[in-house]
Picture 1 (cartoon, helix red, strand yellow):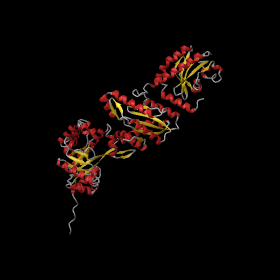
Picture 2 (cartoon, helix red, strand yellow):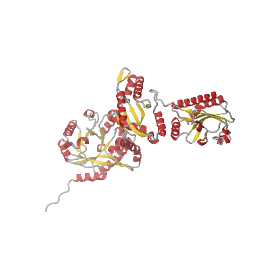
Picture 3 (tube, helix red, strand yellow):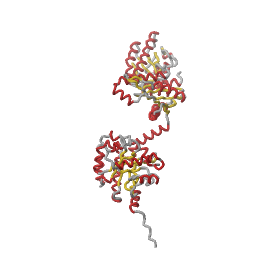
Length: 596
């Protein structure tokens, strides 16, 4: 009788090899027909013994497709390493009451050879049946065993199609997943460590392929695969799971042992490899994750190792262990990306407005439209969190159109109450992929009765302008119509006055990372003063973002900064609050009563 662990391992392998696939059964039919012909029996079957039943995936002479495992003769045959032969089933007390013996089929003879894989697991049998008693000779039994081995070889060959990486010859990701499934059924209580390696920068591989052709790059990957295998012990199977990535599973390794192994691997992998006549140094990054070999954890291992590996790549670290916190952060980002379209349809997004002040007279002269998202389950989401996520999706242009429509509608209302008060909106690089962006904006301006001079468009500084050929013509068309163009977050990254000459800008907004805390940082003061001075010399107006203290405001005034916004002056607020604020400023301070 098979013990439970052996049975679970066999059932897992049946699932992993997908032996119930009808295509496999059809490929085995010629062997089944050959067995019936060779032994002169009316019935030949290839039987797979599953958890609850036996299924005949290939059969000759029998209409039945399956029987209960409880009534399966083959379930006894798989417990043996040799042929189970029963000359007369009626005379055998184990089977004389079996439905296949007493029922309409009236079987008398059975001979079954176990189908044993290279790993020593019996999946089922190649069996012969007859309605008359008989007995196979020793030579016939050996022939039946040979046919059984041919069946197993055919199974493994068919199931290995698509399971090997042709460049390295190693098992691929599909086989890795299949073997993890077997592991989870066989060793569910045991702890393991999964490792995912990235051994070569994909861009470098692509560059080498363009310069040298694919064969030298494939040679590099084969050399890398051999190096990984050389370091690993013989009982660790290495898998080639992606173009430059390899994976394996370690049993009973402590964290110190794993990191020591990664160190040896890194030392071996970083030695130069020859690509053509050029020595190249592979990279080495590893994502590592401990797991129990139960179905849930094993099924999620590759994803968790990817989380850890991407962390290692971004941090340029040799090894990073899986972090549940980092995983939760990534899943939250994905959830925001997937929930945003529903949020837009359900009016979860809204606008608030932050006033901007002219420092020559301390009057609010415009307001920046700022997007807000109140998620029904997660609550208010910071724009610093959701905007970078949405900028990577196809939804961002749609969301920008929503902002344009609502901001222009509010700007039109302000022109009735606050003549001359301007509106500033932010556009992302993705928005300029739409070559009709300015055409659509101009139409909305006309619909709302707005002059282009009442609108300012803020774009971030950066090299993205060169990768969006439609951006500059549209920005020039906006500026020619009277729309003000402002460079937002200047000083936060790709700060270069040279490229500004290509863009028809009128305003430079100094990033809040330089402005906040300005009074306490000599370096920031030097930078901001220099930016303001040079911007003025080039004919640009300057706006300081993130003003939070009087000391910052005083310095900005001293240096001649034109405008400012920040919490010290006014926080983001509703449109109605902006209206009241501007009206109060325009009315001036209340008159003091005359003295008697």
